[in-house]
Amino acid sequence: MVTSFIFIIIILVASVLQTSTGFGFSIMATPFLLMLFLPYEAIQINIILSLIISVTLIWKIKKDIDVILLKRFTLGSIAGVPFGILIFVSMNIEAFKLGVSILLLLLTLLLILKFRVDATPFRDYLVGGLSGLLTTSIGMPGPPLLLYFAGTDTEKAKLRGTTLAFYLFIYFVSLVTQVLIMGSNKTIMIASMFAVPIVLFGMFLGQKLYERINQRAFRIFTYIILSCTGIYLFLDSIFAK
Image (cartoon, rainbow, N blue to C red; front, side):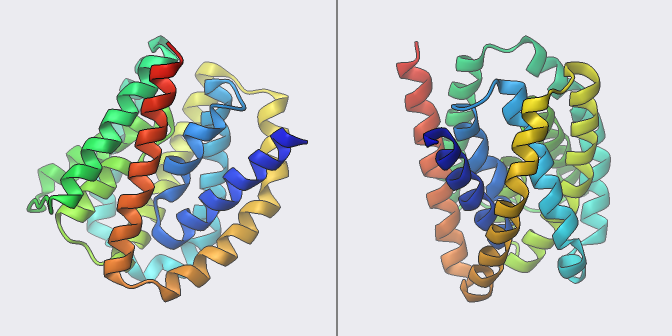
């Protein structure tokens, strides 16, 4: 019962964040799903539910998509996917969590220090490649995108629309790759089906939140999400040793 309640809270909060910001699901859900499931189970559940959110929202956010940028992210991610799989099949789970925590904390620090970068086609492809690598390795495509969008001071509607559209592609490719190489199981299917109504309710709440959040609050919200997730992963990996 306790496990089911924790699972519901994780999925609900992550769905609200994903719908309202465009990137919150994997950053929020993956660390906590690792408490309940095996690594490959947690990552596949994350990918399936994130894919459902993207499919459901695509009609609503299509006007906000930067098509040229989306194409560059997509092409770049294709190169990153196989490298992510190689990392996943050979990684130590505690080392993985420590590495992700340092990445997220560094990312948050850069954002707070108002890190800025000029957008170029090469950087677009590079960010897509890193995102593809992180998706198949740890189920978290969001950090490279978030850093890049924050560094280029992208408007929140474009950020959410382009990110969710990109997720539609990269999560599908990653799910197929994961299943072919790692396989799947009954636990993943049951947990994903159980979570669908929770995801839909979270999307409803997330859309309401998105309509009420301004650009400054959106940025602060980003810092909080990344900081809390990074600190949790760091402490969890340290104390697990």
